[in-house]
Image (cartoon, rainbow, N blue to C red; front, side, top):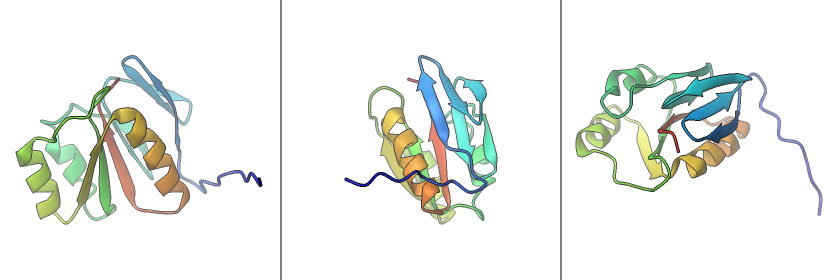
Length: 117
């Protein structure tokens, strides 16, 4: 088996997460978070749709992490994101973090909107 190190160029992968927090670029963000090619920022959760839509010209897909358990995305949120031309993939936050790192390493235009575990 051949192992190769993942290169992220200028982007910052999600380094870790735990009860109520995420770590990216050495920075700890308590609570929900948006992670994107330019960095990361706190997120107010599903009601903070404008924070995600601010990236509509820079991303193709939103990985929506619903916390410890998978849940349906609110219909209004999904419709607004899809209406703005963004794909939406809903999964547990742990899966969203891993998927974000993989897609980021491939140079994909991705945003992780994740609720804490």
